Length: 136
Image 1 (cartoon, rainbow, N blue to C red):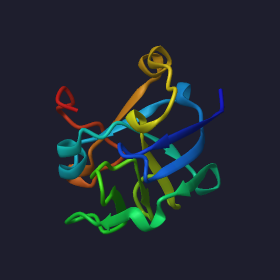
Image 2: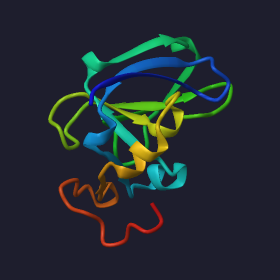
Image 3: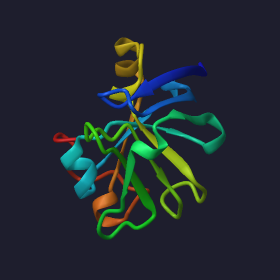
Image 4: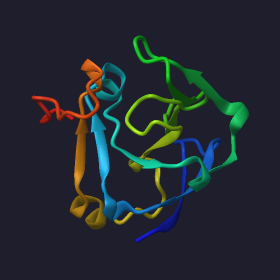
């Protein structure tokens, strides 16, 4: 069920809202940055994501080997509440990966019932599940 969530970084400088259906599923990627950050994300199209405050508080980091992903970090607390991806990863159009742990009022039971898709971003093989997922 589609629901509007608010969310933020740790210090609250960056705030956003997004229309999301948690029951449709979430994702975890095995690329080096997602693994190190332990990112657990949910996707949103641009029309379903709204940055409410903190645009000037964000730092854009593009990881090595994946120049289409814009990892947005709060320059005060360091939290990556969301990122946006140009293309060609998975969808063929721009989308947002929202860190589910940065969503306010998220029902943990609903989150745990939702399917999780694992992505092999480490090998740029987005349509395949990585051989090892236990650490994600």
